Amino acid sequence: MTVEGADLRYRTTGEGPDVVLLHGIARSLEDWDEQHELLSPHFRVTSVDLPGFGESGPPTAPNTMETMARAVLGVMTELGIERAHLVGNSMGGAVAMQVAALAPERVRTLVLANSAGFGRTVTPALRLMAIRPLGRFLLKRPNTKQIYNAERGLYVSRELVTPERLDRGMRFARRPHGPDVMLTTLNGMGNLWGVRARWRRELLARMVELDIPTFVLWGQKDLILPIAHSEAVATALPNATLHVFPNTGHLPQVERAEEFSRLIQTFWAANSDTTGDGVDDTPDAAPHPDHDPETSDR
Image: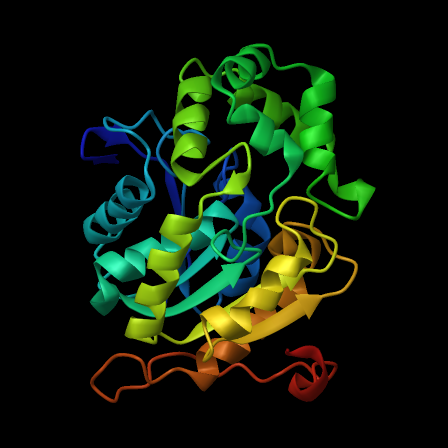
């Protein structure tokens, strides 16, 4: 569909209460394939390629957090999604929070997986790209080794670095508008020293003010946004729930797909009366017998 002049790709499966899934920087809606399969029996699940990423066309304005959030709201409006459970991974988590900041009445709950916004530290590769000449040089000349290293850094399990994922990564990296979109997005979020503090402070302060039910999940061995970021959750969002996946990287929704799905459905069931009219329209989701909230939620 076209939203504010940009052609955006989306995927919708299933029927039921709405769930909207948002990917991270330089990624695509394919990062949510497993969750589409697991959630669609009970929910209408929509994933979006954010402007300039995946198969979506370039944005018509600089790709700031706000312009990406407005694009998500535009997709929701076109699809008739009045309110949704928002789930975001990495940069997508920050975009999900920005959607809530702009239109809190349209967000039932927030699920933030290895989300940007909780700390400054980020992988050196992304910090180096903040040096525009160097970043442009690297992005203009993608090669097989770069794509492999980028994909390998997302997971603990090497088996997840499949030929299909590598081919897709190379295809997206070669899109003509890719370098400009990537550099503009990075510049808005961070610099050579890491993730900028100002937007993080302002966004988290807004989340505290809104007090939307929030579930934060993190992979213990994340190389992109390290597990130390999760330590800020208790202070930044005192009412949020935190779960850490052991031996897991930056994409727990892929690497721990079934457990991820069980956990977020249990969270939604516990916070199902979020319509503002007292109506419970979220399917029940019983905790998995191996999941003990007293030991695995922090």
